[in-house]
Amino acid sequence: MYQPVISGTGVFTPSQVITNDELVAAFNAYAELWNAENADAIARGEVAPKAPSSTEFIVQASGIEQRYVLDKSGVLDPARMFPALPERPDDAPGVMAEMALDAAGKALAQAGVAGTEVDLILVAASNHERAYPAIAIEVQQLLGAGGFAFDMNVACSSATFGIQAAADMVRAGSAHKALILNPEICSAHLEWRDRDCHFIFGDVATATLIERKEDAKGAHWDIVSTRCATQFSNNIRNNNGFLRRTRPYGMEDRRDMQFMQNGRKVFKEVLPLVSQHIADHMAAEGVGPEDLTRLWLHQANKAMNDFIGRKVMGRVPAPEEQPNILQDYANTSSAGSIIAFSQHSEDMTEGQKGLICSFGAGYSVGSVLLTRRAA
Image (cartoon, rainbow, N blue to C red; front, side, top):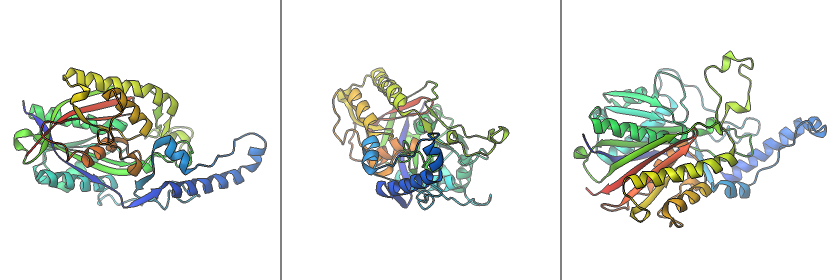
């Protein structure tokens, strides 16, 4: 048995930013157009008018101040309200592969590892741009890596579930150096025309390199243990899929073909589930709140993270103990906790402990307990 460690992380951040003010202006322009087009139905009481959004509403509901996206022009077009991403020929790198490759290069550089040394690649994300061939195999070719590669999807928990799968394989000896890649184009599955959720998501890609402890060249993180759990719920759902064209509605633009959630039920049901999951994981490893230096939580909603932080630590965590990147990146699905870890971990010292946790549709929750090791 080998000790798996995290020796590098990387983040690809798109160059385009949508501020709350920009998003609100576009949404409200769309709402005015929709209300005008449906004025008669509104007057007859058949449909309700679309209410305007506001920057204050977005910040209060989520803590989000902006988001990075691959294309802002399509999202901010009141007559469109979704990104415009041109289709690429089959012999060109896919969009998700290109994003993942950027993040992978940064993780490999941090660890001092060449792409050709990697023998396991997992692309773990909430949505994939195609069913097959696997995006992970495409990245494998682009990196010149060996071994094997595959895609996986556990929605917002994909990164932590991917870390557990890779760590188990490194521990067992079936892989030596594994890349977990989380390219998330959340802007493409968000319904930007829905006031209740139009502000939630952004685009990004993250990478985590896991290898044997004896192979790590510098400072790294011992993966003490991982824990994953699932519990079925329809409260976060997306009904789009390959069977869509077989149904009577065909390619109709239905609301349930994009991200949907019952926010109140999610808040009520997920918070105790995640809090207890983390508490049980820590207890099983003999780790108390006083032993934990940092929590890198899934970046979905500031109020949710604040609640979980208080439950886990038994007090209000200091900002540096529970870092948030939500205000800058918005919800980036599986990548959020890895962004927080990548950007807020280098200051930790030998022996200090931290925990990565992500949670979301499924319901699913995954946690990774880490110990910092100096070079």
